[in-house]
Length: 212
Image 1 (tube, one colour):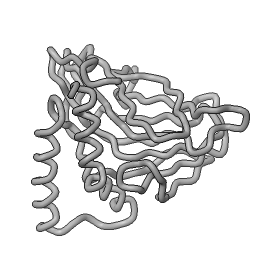
Image 2 (cartoon, one colour; image 1 turned 90 degrees about the vertical axis):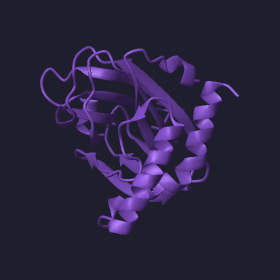
Image 3 (spheres, rainbow, N blue to C red; image 1 turned 180 degrees about the horizontal axis):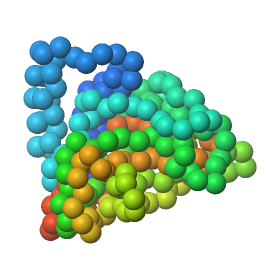
Image 4 (cartoon, rainbow, N blue to C red; image 1 turned 90 degrees about the horizontal axis):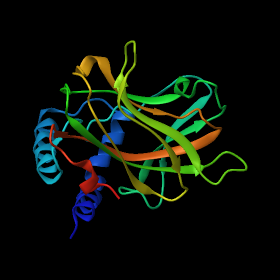
């Protein structure tokens, strides 16, 4: 089994459980017993994936910033766990980041670290006249000059796919000044997300071994 197949198999087998993080969109924090179970499961997940997992897939706060959009949790056949976070972008914008699904980081990233982002996504409804969705995934500082570790524009098909993006930090990135952004306002479209994972492969990491 190749390394790409191994990581996809690991994420498939664990996504049903980790996708319970969607509940944080509407519910309060778990109690102490649930927190302990979450930490145990997180450690097991981290041991399965390459490098070090630097986000918590069990506790994702799904939220899309900006106007002209509608968010919802939907059933979606084909995504691990069977549930997805859906964003309907009602209007394309000249600045696509003005409608963005955005997440704060939990851990710092050091200069030279190689980062691998793996995320389930699809275009549930591309813009009229197009066959694919149009988004950008960016791991970047949230202060001027907004420089990025990862920045990749992606054409999303209508079928679910585990996508990958990678980059190498050219400076230190503190957690409080770094966000993961999915910029969505390139088109009037509906995008669905499943689980995502951010892995730090370290200064000598080779993300190509884990990407299709």
